[in-house]
Image (cartoon, rainbow, N blue to C red; front, top):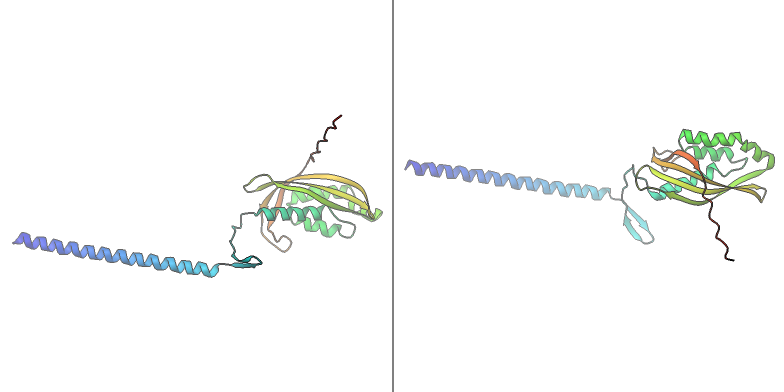
Length: 207
């Protein structure tokens, strides 16, 4: 008789433990479900949609440390256009704009060369100006920092007549920096150096 009582007691204890375990499991599952839907609804509230002629599209947030290839190309073009194309009236403004996009050693290297060539006074003396034509801007790798090369030609004009043309090639790295009014893309050129501009091979004439 005592064995039967002990068995019943053990059975009731096991049943109570099972009920408690099942209740805890169900409660935990409900908590996870509610948390999932809450986080999902919060995310949907933060989604950004862009209206385009092709329809409404959801925007995707890019990590701040990532650099979009389009941004890399754009910053390079802005730098080249301002640092190497100007006249007596725009020289200071253009170079100051370009200096916001390059680190101090690189900026000093280029502006020092301008000073040694007395560029601004030559503009004033001859009424001349420079313009640039970009041939290509290439990204050499797929990881940060971007390693890049830019090929362009600086043209020297007096009046409307082109006097000279100088082929220039730059090699540099592109890194992320803080955004500000003078550098809204938040990118900076570093380790800038002049490299030889490849001369295209002439096609041999067939005799």
